[in-house]
Amino acid sequence: MGANVIVKYLNLRTLFLIVFYAIVSLASYWFAYELRFDFNVPSNHAVDRVNMVGWIVGLQLMLLLASGQLDSILSYFRLPDVFRLFGGLFLNALILLSMWYVYKGVNVPPRAVILTYFLISLLSIAAFRIFMRVKSSRGIEDWLTMDASENVIIIGAGEVGAGLCSDLMNKARLGMRPVAFLDDDVRKIGRYVHGVLVADAVDELATIAKSYNTSKVVIAFPSASAKRMRHVVELARDAGLSVDIVPALTDLVSGRAELSQLRPIQLEDLLGRDAVDLNSGGILTLLHGKRVMVTGAGGSIGSELVAQILDYSPHSLLCIDQAEIAIFNLQQNVLKVKDSSETRVTTQVIDILHAEQLEKVFAQHRPEVVFHAAAHKHVNLMEAQPAEALRNNFFATQQLARIASQCKVERFILISTDKAINPTSVMGASKRLAELSLTAQQNSDTNTTMFMAVRFGNVLGSSGSVVTIFRNQIAGGGPITVTDPNVTRFFMTVEEAVGLVLQSATEGTGGDILVLNMGDPVKILDVARQMIALSGLREGTDIGIEFTGLQAGEKLFEEVQHLSETLEVTQHPCVMRFVAPNDSQINMSQISQDLESAMISSNVAVIKDAIQKHIPEYTPSVEV
Image (cartoon, rainbow, N blue to C red):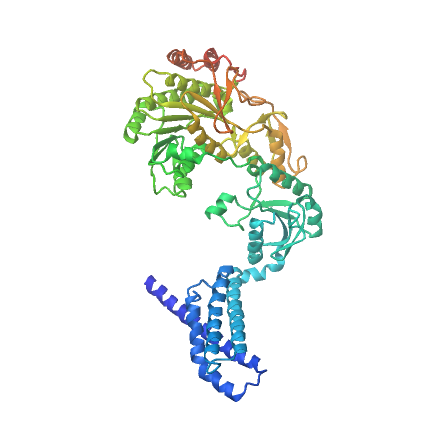
């Protein structure tokens, strides 16, 4: 039934276009004679006009068909379509002109008529196609809402800015009317893009906004650095303007988003850094065609790992997590969106503390590369539950590493944290113990697996992230709570962190602790103030900031290097390798026994003392 409807529609559409082009050709041909003879066509030419009309119109119709005018989508009319239309009609004119010279003008229209016929036909059909394009991009609601549109300034007069301007002009229902561009390229200033003036440089935003009576700017350079974004946002904030941004360049290129799908600028845009150039060839060699396993696959890091790993087409990908809802969200938000046609993807709800189940999973799936992202990572929660932190972060990792080694896994990558460096929290100390367990397993006589740990700082927007907490506090009317005015943290976007984790996996040779270049530390107070400004609020007037003091286990600042470690460069500038003194004498059996004995007591202080005995750089918090 559906196919019949389509065929019928196509037949009606083709018939309509044939009739339409025939009428246009006939009218153009007829009118060309009138223009040539000043609307007083001599009788002999009038007879010739009638006698020749059949084959003249027929020839033009055949050439229009040959140039694809019956197959084109009418609402699409760009330069390539113009050239095809011009080519078909121009070829028709050339044929007629050549016939005039061959037949000495007998039974062929005069040369002036031929040229006029060509021009009228071209203008008429082009006007029709332009009308169809405008009609398709501007519904009735677009025309009715034109006067209600808000004036906006577009920052960036490049290809993205020009495309956005065209979209906004054609879709007035979006409620935005571009009135000016700003761009730092002096060659563009004073020129027009789609009829809109490139008024001045970006630094003149406040003046131009006042001149054009605008209250909003749109940033249209998605590949710009975070530093550049911050500068524009500060200019807009000082001028009292709201700021939107076009989708990310990767989303535009992949087709996941359109230029007109603007969104308010977010903190991630300001704290992110320049795109990192990854060695995709090395990562491809590591993952393509391999059997890969990700633990904690439903978490913020784990789910991004899954998404990026799928881009390299592994043979199979096993995603495990102890939380049922995390696996469900992974299936809905990642696996249904990503193209995994070349990869056999399996998800399982399993607790990595269960050795028997874990061994069955390894025996069944035989992973070659393991990314271990499962962990308890919330500092404050783990301070009161050190036994749970040890079980999930240390003992589970130790067990997983043992099974991986037994099953001849090629590479095992632990997702660690900068809080493992000179730790003051149970969480950080438990991750440091996990790192040591990998070192011990690496040094085992029977081991063939390359074990490595990758450390990095806070991930923007992840579960428990300060950014998420601040967003919720702002939504609730405040106040925003900051522990200390001088507290700083390292921040990375989840995409950058995971990309560099994959890069690190290619750099490690076994027994490595790799640390990502996390840039400069950021004051949490500055983060709070930026989020207030981005929300269109004023600090102290609309919402306040309160200082609560450092909580148990928290540091004033995070460190990038362990007291006993030295720095080595790798082949990638954003990945560093830290080398500790020879840890081959680590007695993990004794450490495990001591910690298990302390955990039996369920006494927080006893457990922390036991941790400190084996991690001397650990300075436990006095609060519990």
